[in-house]
Length: 129
Image: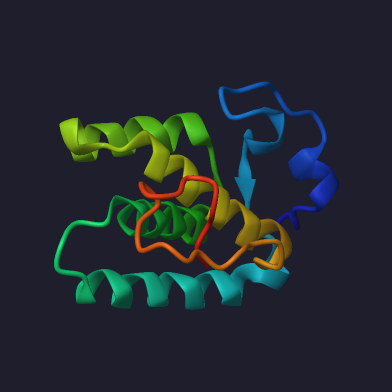
């Protein structure tokens, strides 16, 4: 098994609609346990919510794929989630979920801010851990 280094993950990146830095999400070995813990937390939180929370749903979908494959292509997961959720797909929630999981996979979540509002729709500039 090839160990993926930060240089391999962030070396030659192409531009996307979210910027070059978000091209691929790669799970580094040192952050695997944290991503597994966060995924369990998201599943538990989603089970306790009474209404749909697309941000948590997308975090779970992205996290499961990340843990299974050690990397996620944003174009492919975006197409998969649009097909899965259809008209209820929320792009802003997807972008937030992508950014949160990308931060956990890269830096262990140390650059995330605690969100004060209950929904990413209320304040798209604040990310919840």
